[in-house]
Image (cartoon, helix red, strand yellow):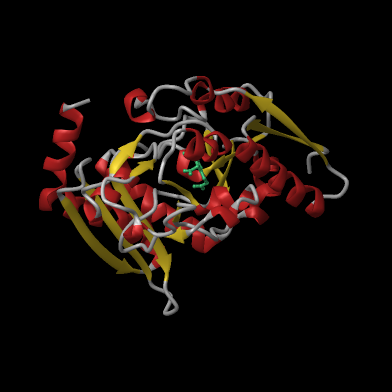
Length: 310
Ligand SMILES: NCc1[nH]cc(CCC(=O)O)c1CC(=O)O
């Protein structure tokens, strides 16, 4: 067993909360091990004024941490699983995926409270094509405004940019203690979450057996299986994190893994929805099968148009 573990993290409030949360779990589990945090800046943190969809690169929030891990400067990195590319760099792996509690998206609208009460042409802030498309699908009248920055910046913009509502992940708001601002958790029939939303990913070196063994207790197998299905789905459609794709997998009480997904055009006018269920042991196959089916049923054309315009 190692005597010291160094956790790499980004410096945003959410990233620090997540890293401190994992540090606390490790300290409780290994009282004699020194757990250190190391703050790092990623490309994603530096480019704050350009819509993410326009930058388009994969792993914007993970790359610098991964370089530090490969060089041995840090032993593990804590990320929102949602921000992780489906393919990790050579030599790194997901040592653990933590239990997912809040996969959904939240509307914050101090004045109107819910999506269906927003007035015609209301201004809604979101930086995600996935949220934008799903909102426009049910409310084509809405004006969607790009909303970048850390969670606290985005909350402030609701006021400073006179928006009628903003959309954020429930998980992030809860972690920062801001859940009281939520006025509606959107139902999955309206807004399917991003791949891996709500789960934390613990990344480590493949050849670092000692650290991997120490991190194993953080893993929640049902969440890992569900998010494996989602990540395989995304890899198959070659989506990256900035495509209008929503997908959510969960173990139902009977022990089956069920997967719901949507592929949309950015204006929300075209939508392909599908669902699949099967054994959790076949999580990757379920994700892949569903992706192939949806690509064949019109998804490929939607995505081709999207990439043409980028
Ligand atoms: N893209 C930024 C990001 N990455 C993870 C979260 C929240 C936590 C999560 O979704 O797991 C957020 C904020 C948001 O999407 O509102």
